[in-house]
Image (cartoon, rainbow, N blue to C red; front, top):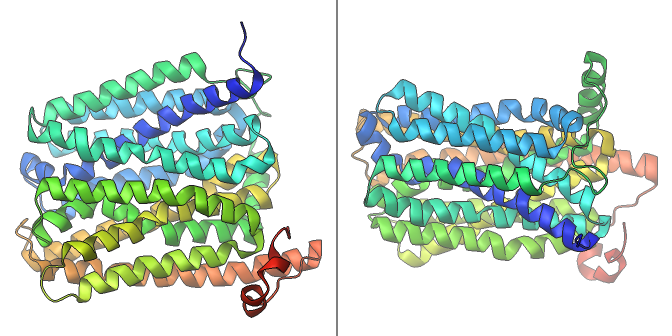
Length: 439
């Protein structure tokens, strides 16, 4: 008996979500294995950082091409290809013992990861009514972070027990499994299993990309993603575990527990941010700026604390950082609301570049600073991390400037073209009922 339409929609979304969960596991696997990788490959902090930077560089560099491919070939083919590429990368990582092999492995992981998230996001507006899209977009990002839990707990346990090869081979096996799930269950649209768009031509590529980029709302989404996402990604993907273990003196188990708090915070806050985004579309940027302030404020407290920070302050830090992932999803809501469906994949790819460019630059800068202070050894002190982690304030400042500038341009365009009137913040705070329901 065929599934009811709503049940079928949830089944398709769940299959895509499973692929994204494992993609996040692959993406963050090097973060929990950072110290192990330094010993296995006999490398310093900057070389280790270059692994993650290369992975993110491939990811970010492919976002716009993948977005265009998504508009042409649909979600099914891209999710399946991405899962197999990541499984191949993790298999290579499991068995290589030289730097060249590790580099190729992270390139494969970055390429496969680049195909997954925006392909799963593309399923949501095809399968669900528009009023559900902001919340389901948030939930997609949130549930996907279960992949961080998988890297923080079972993958870390395999690293500490059976060892490197078993841990990464197990991750590869999970990738093959979700590829089979995607092949069996995914459909691009309710009408067609594979939904192909128009042929890719240079003229169309230029038109879609320039059209998405010219709209200040797309660039506002990019700067939103840039500023909210990077510090949590840096923490989870590369420097969080080394900072907590080598800098703050925590055990591996305690560091993993804080990563769990980080993930659970994102999962809990995402639906709330999704509902606020849906109800107050004209105040999305204030949510973004509030999250950035929470992130930087928490880092300022930890960095300024004399000696190693108490556990309560570290919990506060990971809770603040956990808001960044859901906050970055607001960037995709800008892409959806400011672009027509025909170029949504391209616009989503443009937005998704932001956070990963910021992340890779920050990861590399932190690694360079740590190496400069320790001479390339892994013998870190809390003072080394204080200096290195402070680079995040400069990156956040660049992002806030970008948000404020593009917000002004986007509002001006909405006022001129749609007649939208933006109430002052003072009026919003004093008369919230006037904003409720305004679109």
